[in-house]
Length: 166
Image (cartoon, rainbow, N blue to C red):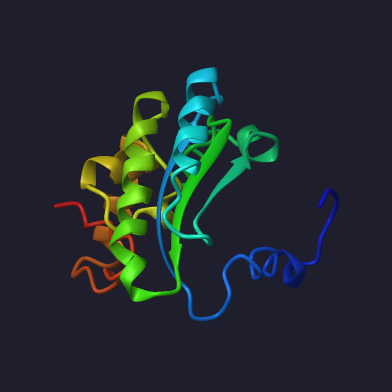
């Protein structure tokens, strides 16, 4: 898995672990590092996965992402070392509650060690505070000003909404 890959190949990396018909719920955090405490919490949480397809995905960040100045784009988390994602995945509808609860408690147990934000595309049910921390307050304010200029009526609001600035 090391080396350049065609886009189509990257898009199939997780197909076997997420077959058609599965459902999922995700929580996530940015981390500067994985300390011994974080690793112990990861071990404890993965040991109690509620369904066989549930998983934790770790993405190492840094490199080219970190070389771009933090205020150059809307992307947040450029200084993070890792993105940890906690997927509760189920096939049977009866597993939903256990998988959602597991993802939430996994994320909650790691929150004291996290940087406070996450990748914005993973913020479906997050608070406004968490979204602000994911972008960074200055970037979010700039995006709200842009939104006020180009979408003052907030027509484009159904996914990861940024409200127009007043």
